[in-house]
Length: 310
Image (tube, rainbow, N blue to C red; front, side):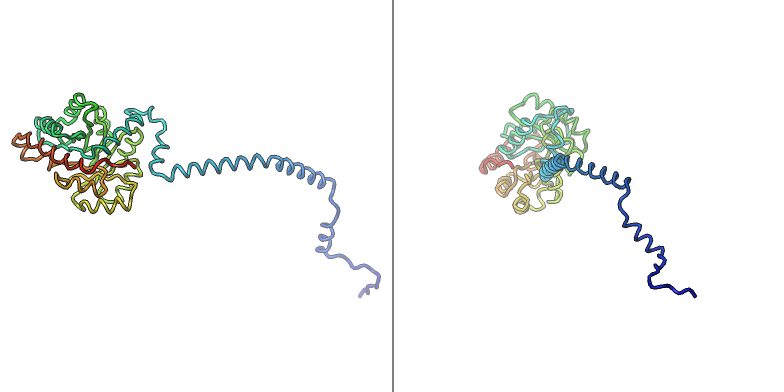
């Protein structure tokens, strides 16, 4: 066996050789790579201010977008900045006019008659009794014909809308006939969005607070409580207090005597159907009775005063 002398170097293990190799000075290629990397980093650092500025701008833009989206009505506005390019679009001024009329008058006559002949006579009696907002419903025969006729005769004197709208096609036909606002019996998001995109006031039918908030978020400035008989004025008071962004319009269940009570307890406006257009009076052709009903309810409504729009 070979004996290792004291001063004789021991052979290096493969692991030790690799360790020593890693400690060698940089080769010329390594130095050139390091120099190029340094130059690149300096260039990046020089442009960092632009990157920061761009990021700041992006953050600011995102904040603005978040602010817009935080409001349901602002969301509709953000989508409808070019309403004038859409078919059947109304102006913002017209939209405000319709809402202000609802806030001032606060009561809408909702007419349904079984025959076409009774429709114009009943509506004329209602207007003679003092109503300034009226609604023709599509369940009435020749509804749109009568709507167009009254719009031509009472333009700027009586505000005229169309109800029982069930789809966008119905809404288009109603607007073409001259309707100034749209009413639906149930909450129809596609119809609400169609109207909101065109600055057309819509009051969709809702039964629960959840449906009302959904209608509001889709862009409905008024929420029709239908039927309104379910909870009565106290229901409206409780919901309008808890959800002050809503503008509730009870219809069905509102009569000649309690209309003012609904308004005094938070309703933005009310709609009157059978109590105003008494079916017996219509069947008998007693138009004077309908005019008297209209005069009575409007006298009660005026005691409450105008509604403060939200």
